[in-house]
Image (cartoon, rainbow, N blue to C red):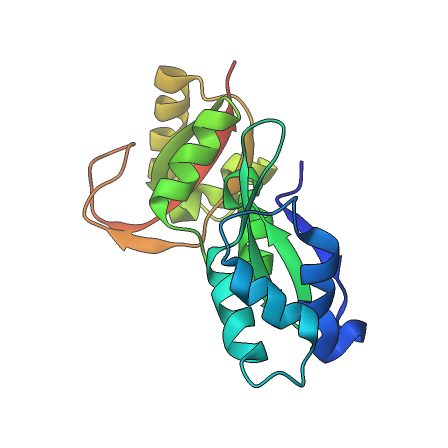
Length: 182
């Protein structure tokens, strides 16, 4: 499931706010009706862009599953539900790594196991390629896998420094790994 839907392409240009007011009122909520009236009057109104900024900041849509969507404009106008995004969608859309809490919530929603592990284990866990690991690292990895039985690794974050990890409580470069449950 995607947490990103395009509402209007940037081909509508300065009329995106007006189109939103004309076509989305009644479906979206949490906006000021005066702002919608201003948007419907078009870009010639002196408060058009201020009203649009307010609507972009406050409008929400709740879908049939109870997921809440917000607006995001970057040329095109998007409906965005962060809770419905995959980590990859989040990285691609916002051009940044999600916070740890995002990974935790994503893992819980999708019945995945989350572990913070040494970053240099990534190739071995994702591709089964242990060629970049020392013998001691391979031994430690294999022992961890025997203890945890993590399933298949389905995603990994960018590396970051932490004072410990879920494998050996040692500090260093780590990453967040998501695994299917066995």
